[in-house]
Amino acid sequence: MKTDHIDTRGFVVILILALLWGFNYSAIKVTNTGFSPIFTSFLRSVIASALGIAYCLAIRQKLYHRGTLLVHGIVVGVLFGLEFACLYLGMLFTGSARAVILIYLSPFVVAAGAHIFLGERLSPLKWTGLILAFAGLVSVFYGKPSKYTRLMFIGDMLEILAAFFWAATTLYIKKHLAEKMHPINTFLYQLVFSIPVLFLCSYFIEPQWIKDPGVMAIWSLIFQSVIIAFVTYLVWFKLIHDYPVAKLSVFTFLTPVFGVAFGALFQHDELTKGLIIGLLMVSAGIFVTNYKR
Image 1: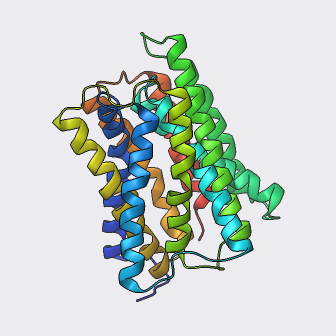
Image 2 (image 1 turned 180 degrees about the vertical axis):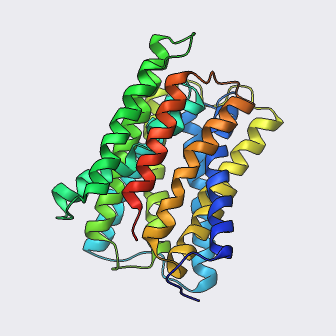
Image 3 (image 1 turned 45 degrees about the horizontal axis):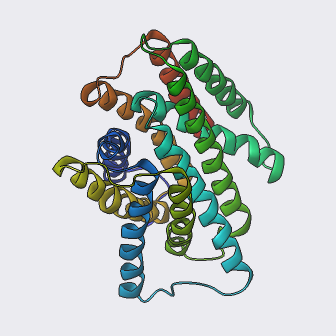
């Protein structure tokens, strides 16, 4: 049932989603020990696509559109594939705690892009959010861990590039697909059409796809494919249907908080002062950027 406020049920569900999304960054580090990163993302899209297609058939929702909408769906899939190629490859070099903060610069790029390309004016609160995000980015880079290397810098840059691809995907969906098709179709287009992109990236970049996969790496791949890429996003789309999306988006600031906590707990990421300050600034920026009375 639709409602104009976040009730207890909605809050608990979004809290669980944010926790799972934050944990996902540590899970990616685990799969990187057994599989090459982009190949992992390719497998993730294949498995989640199969589940998404089965779900569409079960609810009797058509799988694809024709004409212009299909072309837009292909573009969204290409952008989505490039985003995850950068995200997974970047995490081969940088820590999960740094990655989750850098990737969550995307909401601010979306806000700025919507102002430029969609005519959505930035309010004082959104300007404040953008300033906080930029300050948080600077803080993360100044708060380098003691073992910071050039490879970690490359990983950081790939995460920032992934944030821009994520923002580009969101803006493109807003402009060309929002309210023109069922959300599950948009979700499925991202997964299905990312498959060839990720396969080609893996083919040309990664000489060895399978390293030495142990039980943990395989379970981590299943978790990312089934729980994260399919279940959590399906639940998210259902939440969007029942609750105001602007109010739901406020709570996404919890994802980098959980991501940093899990990175420190499971990956032993170094929590530098700059990282903590950057986390607080980016999380606060997400909150004020999405906040509405």
